[in-house]
Amino acid sequence: MQKADLHIHSTASDGKHAPAEVVKRASARGLSVIALTDHDTYSGYFEARAAGVDAGVHVIAGAEITSDYKGRECHILAYGFDVGNADLKKLLLDQKFRRINRARIMVENLIKLGVDIEFNDVEKIAMNVPISRNHIAGLLVEKKIVNNVKAAFNKYLSNEGPAYYKSEYHSVEDVIGIIGGAGGMSVLAHPGLLYVDEDLDYFARTKLDGIETIHPSHNFDLQRKYEEFAKINDLITTGGSDYHGFKDADDQYLGVVCIDAKKADRLEAFCRERKENITS
Image (cartoon, rainbow, N blue to C red):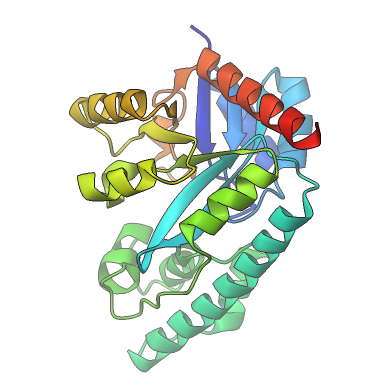
């Protein structure tokens, strides 16, 4: 079986390794297909695609887009979209500015808590990519305020943490619509982390195209549950490692938490047909 990983992050958002290095590591772990799904950007796709030609790894355009679902953050994986689509570009640019504002407020909250930190230092770590909580966590580790990223979230940055700030994002319905309008596929990311059955019933009534069934947070029972949900609601199933490249978090999953590459083929066929329908 050829293997695919459709949930991977790079330095284009909050991953440890550059897109080309991610491709190299994916190849070394036996993956033949990957999707780079950085948070609210696909800027790393072009570097990854070029590296994939040399490494023998097929790279699918992707992004993990933050949206709002009933006042909560909801992550939608976008695949196979037209990278030149104006509406998608506009959405992701807006997301970038929202992330900057959120990070600035969270840094202010940390300062109020007595933490010696400056927003400029967060920007230096992020290096012009969409700022995430992982970048703030990385700075806290660098300054030896906490021992590791997990500790930063546990003490300060989790949704229940004292420094957390909830940003306002576009609705999940709007995000799904923009992805579809760009000829892409929208997939609900890691449902086991965030949602109960009532939430899934809601998503089934949207124009969602698929659901991520394989993820490090999903045990076999959850995998079977989401496979059955997908079958009942005519959704495509995907999966991946949610790789960020940090040894204390997820490095072990690359090449292990993956899916049959035939599913990636079906995903791309779906997107090709959608684009044809848009232009016809």
